[in-house]
Length: 109
Image (tube, rainbow, N blue to C red; front, top):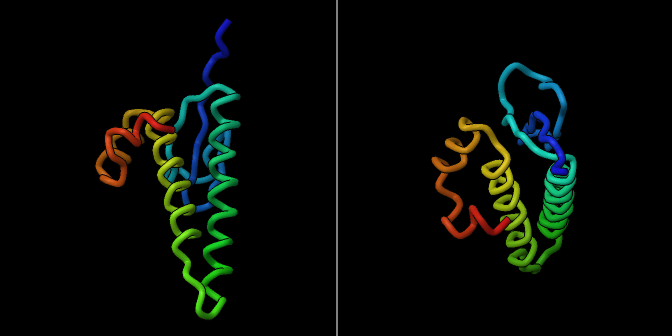
């Protein structure tokens, strides 16, 4: 038996996935199973780690930040691909109009 999808709210600024929106605006509406939300939260954790690596690297002299930036960019693309995959029509439209994902990337994550 397939697990039923539930409604969640994702705030990109805070990185929070909630059962109820904290604010009336400023979030994406997602419909996901518990397993899909678990996977989505893993992308958020990876993004958080990549963000801190980029921040830390910025404070080291003579260090090239390319690897950390690439990791951060990839996790952000994964997050937006998941928003597209799990989101309502408004979320899908928003991500599509951003133009940051190729057709292949919409399906990769």
